Length: 498
Image (cartoon, rainbow, N blue to C red; front, side, top):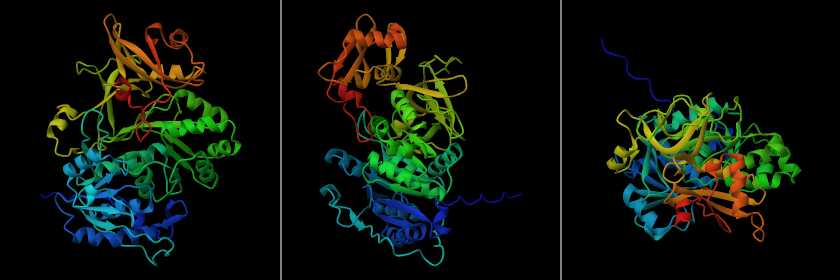
């Protein structure tokens, strides 16, 4: 007896063919309805399909500025079944040359008038024409057939902290699975209006922040450039969700106690989400005290999209990234490869399996072999502990944040949180460096609140010892005017060590 053919994979953006008059995207004063978005993106599909881009191995680069043109270009390529390579507009010459050589896109999409680097001159250029206010079509737009769920949707390049950036191939299956798991965890609906000011060349800003609302049939308002005034304005004007990174929430925490309008706007939001790095507990507490609302955190990577989150109907526990999302298996593993004991103090590497995982690294079978276990678990390189009720607490990266000192395995994150509770500390980072007696000694990098009167080394060591344990106190304190950060606000600890 022959088996029934598999059911067709649902469209990534069913709302494009549903309600043409519904608001979809707004960037500043420019906005598109779903009908206008479908028409603008649909107009590019024949060009992408007819220029030899679609098909096996065809890819298109997108010059990913925070604009309507970027959003329309990405949606058009996904409708055409062409994998998207988002390019950071601030990328350096060497890194851009590597990404172009590795991904070999056949064309580049950009906004009209955008000045592109000379490295892109060899590619066929298509300007993404967007004319807001043309009105929604009279009837829903017919969408192209949905490609195979395992076909690539995007190739997103990692930050390259340990070598040249690697291209993570994200299939359509992973994008859909992650966004649908967040629908469940965050009770995300078509009625939600998301506001954010994130860049559009990575998972957080592009996939979660633009494709997420479009998959739900909701809308997104992009600030262009993040500001607390912009956040307050949009939340007060009906936005229900805010996405940000810790540097953004830190600015909110610094302002909210003295800004009644910001506090009121935050208190009216349905969901405040922080990601891309750990949000210090001190900032959680300041926002909660001033606005009476809680920020929740989630955990993901370029290669895995989203793995865990604090649920909208769960306890917003500061310092944790919540529980595994629907469909995601997560375990903590010892250095030996054995699962960690059932102990909330046991630190282990996070490994995950599920439909959210990438297909592999482009042109890097060696990296694939190193990243996956024989039974299909992805090695994240992130170290964590797990509370008895399943909440995950990340303590840092295996390569830079796990410090082995005096026989203990110590996560840098908890020491950083403790240091930030000292009134004399504005910013903090913790690393380990070789020590002949301890193996590694704990080093605290401090941006003092008052550079003229920084807290002393002994004072900070005693503060941490009282908060945590004596063996977790910093042995060395170094003072800086600022911490080195990347575009996402993550502290670049290798730069500290250098």
